[in-house]
Image (cartoon, rainbow, N blue to C red; front, side):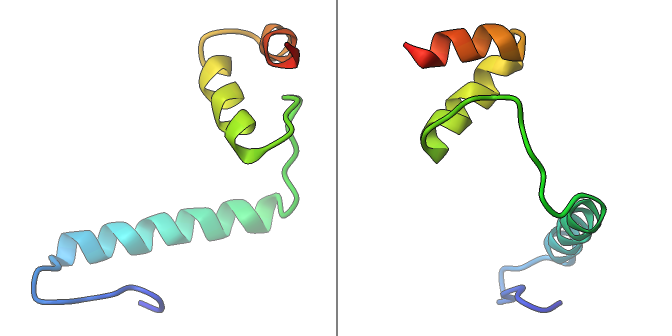
Length: 68
């Protein structure tokens, strides 16, 4: 449980969930250490908005909207 902060209010379920999430991210990182996207962005905030928009539209239409 490296990096997991545990205190009196921490449940075993929370600790296990945190470890499960960490394991998932480690596996994803090992599989694809340098992920890329077709979305165009200039800042992490723009990327966040583009990802949210892309759930409702195509990457192409999101890129047109975020260019403006």
